[in-house]
Image (cartoon, rainbow, N blue to C red):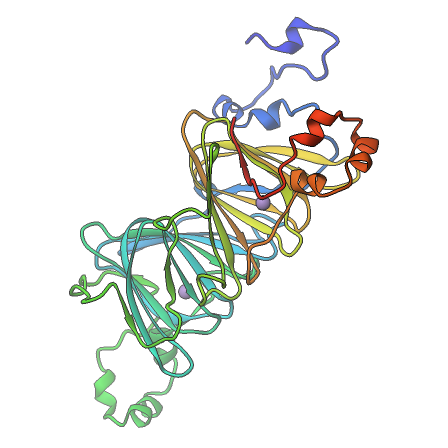
Length: 376
Ligand code: MN
Ligand code: MN
């Protein structure tokens, strides 16, 4: 391979004649040959679902990325799940709140709130759902080919396998107590399974009259990808879902970002929460600035999780030849950011010039308003 190392003996680094995976090396150029601006020993902020253990069940599968896999990801844990048509994620509830983005196919979700108000909805690709902490719910794959989705919990240490499940609970309650509770004879439970079902095959349910039904005051589902963008710019689009428009989602705020080839999600940070990313399509790189001269760049591909601790500066650049689409999630009731360019635009220009030694043309070009995406 014709590398700068061979061309110039004074260049930093050297080639890699020893053992390595050519497939992985080719996917991670920013690790193999980091930009000269990288420095220090910044924590790892990347983990791929492709490397997460697949829990296979009859009817589907699940895999998770928690702090056990990605130590820095303390505020949010993620799950990727597939349900075949008719297959059911057992009626359950859990300690953290659950946020979801539909990646493939269609699903029916159900839940009730603490006032006993009900909710049933069908969701498709690009739709969200949110179930508050402790609220019982279910998910079922619909015809023709079920669904695949991303789950995010507002606790990085939470495991999807530590949920409270309806059959599991009832199987571990004395039968006479069950009979008393439901005012039936004990033999009513003769055919009930004796352990959790988790994911199991079922029959696809009949069509819903309306795609969203029920009496909850704020629906637990939301159309994100299918709504007009909050920002439509030459370099791409941003769609935001938080408690201002998706009123049920009080602990998770989200941005769905689309970047054209070469475009940049501009230099910025988030003052209020860590950022948990899920990369949906395309490819790119991100550099995280961790203060005190420390910066690290990593490459990302579909199915990857990325993470940026609160207030650490970062950008995302589309390094591929097709659109890059990824999710930014925050454990917060609303989306918020500080843009480097906008900050400088709203700082006395002579003060900016004292720092950066830039000329008037730079200062005049600073954007006064929001400009989250810059074309390549
Ligand atoms: Mn759940
Ligand atoms: Mn960000």
